[in-house]
Length: 273
Ligand code: AMP
Image (cartoon, rainbow, N blue to C red; front, top):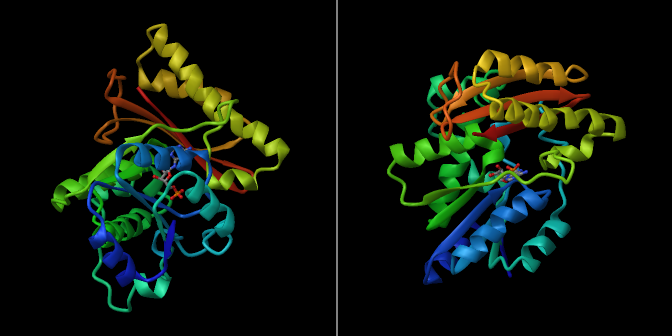
């Protein structure tokens, strides 16, 4: 497996490859969620490139950028064992210059939900994704449904800017007890981890209620919030696949979204219906 820090070297390497290229952008501290994206890419492409870059522009001042977990040695082993061909780990100073054009995500979809408490977060996400897609020029790029609003905005950018890469959504990977995998789960102590389970439990309850015919979003939100009383829920929202808020569930076109703080750790989860 090759490891590149230098942008021009990876561009050269990319040019030397013949065949389809799968690309998995990550911020490192890899877990089984990332691994499923990597496996999907390895299975469906001739070559797979993974990037590891903690992108400063998607963090707001005061957020956990400096304490974002770093596990470079373990990450590289995971990539190597999974059949990754190359890992790209650029320096911040090579990715960003002092005179950057600004990419602004569409306000009506990017300054709600995840972007409401974190304005400019998605501007930073789109900026880094566009830069990485331009450097790697992949055939397919893999993103988790766990970050569903991010996935929507990236797909929208790929369409709007006529990018040639296919954006491939991947299923959410969970612990056996239902907790969605996240690099931030390591911050949870035992007690908090138990409380965090109420997030995925509330999604299961909503799912059961829908099986019994409950499609009213206000009622579903009520059921979910009752289950999450021991944690600090930031939002429970139900949207269609275009990220417009809806009042009634439409099967195959709805997503239930939750963001909550458990202790100091902010977690998100969702259910695609
Ligand atoms: P991150 O390193 O947090 O930026 O995540 C990199 C990619 O992994 C993103 O596309 C995420 O949506 C995806 N991802 C993170 N956690 C999960 C999960 N539990 N299941 C599936 N994909 C995930």
